[in-house]
Image (cartoon, rainbow, N blue to C red):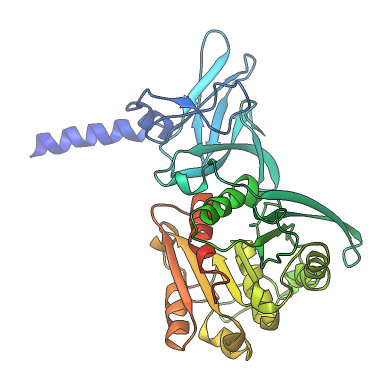
Length: 392
């Protein structure tokens, strides 16, 4: 027994001296292939069957190069030609942002396409998913993602949104369509849902399969600025600053209600009645959806929140029209997000959703298996949400 304990102590001591990258490197499966979101003709970055990401970059004068992905940095090795190469631990299925760290400077990988996330343009990679068919490019009729530039009187600046129109939009000019206002997360922008989320392909495939009704999707820039005086926000009973600060969503709420919705109804063949209008969002966009639809239930009939908060019975009590106006409350999370209790200021999301159902509202709670606060969770959430819209 003592001999066994001594051997284990030696092994643990050796493991303790290794970096995360070294621990995972010893059992790497050598079946790497170029990522599906590489720039044309680029062999790196690559992905293997385990979901590991391998990168390669020429930096002969660098002293240290790391792969930064999933909040972990992995040291790369330098060969005699000044080429650095290395890989990560296995990643969750789906899309991930990543960067290279060269002597302390974080830069995009020159082999990858660039995506806007974490408040900057950086690299992205796709880990092949078992269910990726629902957002794959298929030989089906495709809609259009249109760039719509406008001037916002409220913000005194130029705005931009991307508008998805379904395949039949241009075929029959007499048909009008419902509208989903779909918001991105914090540090992302109006390109996120089509570039990273493949919202247009998800819609095309669902419509082609007869699983969803065709509708318009509007994806606008919904980021916010800290309200003036927010640093003086009142503390809650636990003596912690209340977050997000009161009024944080007012700017986008006013822009959406007073400018964006009227603009869409004027320029597109939308069904402008509230029963044909939905709002949803991921993370920060989910919080915006919560605040805006509770404040203005007379404007919407369907609500979707992906990976952020929920709507409680107290919320509904404070918004008297919400229960009678809203036809569906959809809440979704990644399974890994729910491994830790989520009793924030909005309460437990599953308990809240079930309480609304018990009170007579139509609700749906979805969990994306084996994903966290990431695009695969939100793609799956949109895929589950979309068939439930505009069916009444």
